[in-house]
Amino acid sequence: MTASPVTATTARRSVLGGVRVVEMADWIAGPFAASLLSDFGAEVIRIDLPGKVANTRTLYGLEDIDAERSPFFAVFAHDKKSITLDVRSDAGKEVFLNLLRHCDVLIEGFRPGTMERWGIGWDTLHELNPGLVMLRISGYGQTGPWKDRPGLDRVAQAFAGASFLTGQADSPPVRCGLGFADYSTGIWGALGVMLGLFERRCNGGEGQMIDQGLYESILPMLCEVPLTWQRYGRVLSRSGNRVHGISPGEAFETADGAWVQISASGEVAWRRLTEAMQRPDLFDDPRFATTQARDEHNDVLLPVIADWVRTMTADVLVDRLDSAGVAASRMHRIDELMSHPQVLARGDFIDLDDPIFGTLPAYAPMPRLSGTPGRVDRPGPRLGEHNDEVYRGLLGLDDDQMTALAGAGAI
Image 1 (cartoon, one colour):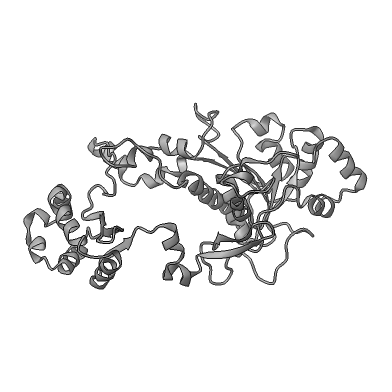
Image 2 (cartoon, one colour):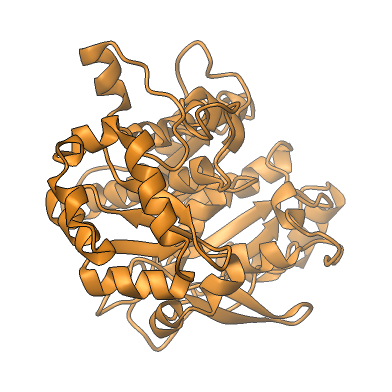
């Protein structure tokens, strides 16, 4: 792994200390992959176009935003460095190639063929730096008839079949309320980078290119849906909170107007639920003798459970089910989640101090490593905040060179 004067030094061991990553991606997926690497010690240098504020920098800004950063970006881009560079210009391309000689990983999020048109595609970069691991994120991947089409999270959800499965049975399809195509792509991408680095370090291999499409990140989450279609000829569709073939597994409204998710589909859990309800007759009823039978008779079973649930507040219900050994949870609003004793005890949210926005809530790094845990130290950078540190400190450019690059609009 490379090391340099601009690598941040801390008093802790980090898994990826000495790994340098260049991030050339907007929106969520690519930058999130870079953030995951940064959490565990990688030095991430984000490239922004000179004079242009990227979409990610202003995302979810609402009314609380400065000229180039939203509070979301301050949290999302934590611990990264920002340089301005126009790689499309001859001068900028030369600096970019020089930078890549000193780096281990490149993450890019352009449409396929874009970097090739700029003369900095995979073949060029691999020849320049054979150890480079390059993560390429796009809507549909680098190959196939749809490779040139634009793709964003909600479009990926639609294409991959997730939206068709989301919503009530008698309602139109809806997107998931979370950007799980973007974020899962970031996770898969970071895993790909780690595998590439592992191959290079432990097996003596060269760097390699990782090709990840947004929609492909959803496919493993389809669970039994492809099997059910191919083997049994059934197209699974929307079922609200119910899961096909699992019962009871539904959300129920409590006496205080909250909603609680109950999952008691296995035979042991089903017995425990009937005991908590003090309804042994339900357990002995042949209509509810197996999970499949209960699923087939949900129209009878679920109203009985719903009537029982409505006699209690959410807290009383969840505690009673916990005492009985039945998995259940209130469907938390964000204010309830962030103040929950379990979340507080685990430190799942941490405070990040920003000079403009003050204290912001950030997610604690995951996964939790016992010996080399992740860490969040500083908020997302200002546009070009680290130009001098990288260009002078790492690349050794002098005043005349810096002035010339600025005059050419390259930085």
